[in-house]
Length: 214
Image (cartoon, rainbow, N blue to C red; front, side, top):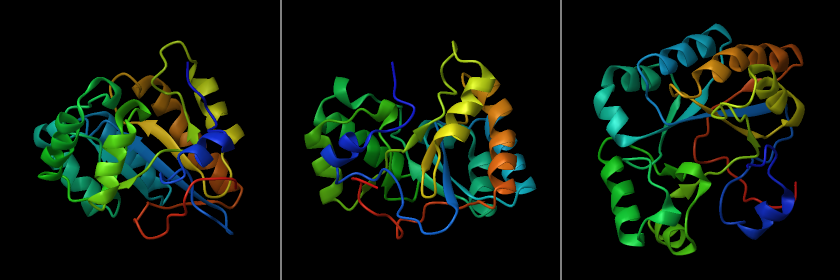
């Protein structure tokens, strides 16, 4: 069970995390978790290039090591890279010390202080430790659900098209599991919003507003 649209009460409860960007213009923030992947990530990069869109890639450290050429392409094409742990750890099931150490291990390969917890699961003490070290913990406003094998590609598209507003941080996954839904939805999301006058930008760590009522 997951929430497609993050409710305001949840953003307020964890207001020291980043959920959306304060926006006065038609700007959206696509993010991709779990890569780089040798097939899914190049597909994403090709689609972004076609639409002159930028995005943020929350990378797993071990995947960066295994797919360095793809990782370097992300950077070369002007996108932002960010930390998603070294081994896709679930913070709720991991001790604080092991969790934070795993993020630092990923930082050896990913030069970024932007961090997203896998599954969105992070303990308060883990979050405090990262914030104290200068990390920005990035959550989301809209979850595409592309990872859900029971969700149709069309419903994945509908999740994003029907819930995104200016400033939304949107989650897709550049992974094998999500590829069927993501590869259908992403090009259509880009077309849909560009036709409505939106542009897509990467998170840069400077334009964040804290979560809370929009």
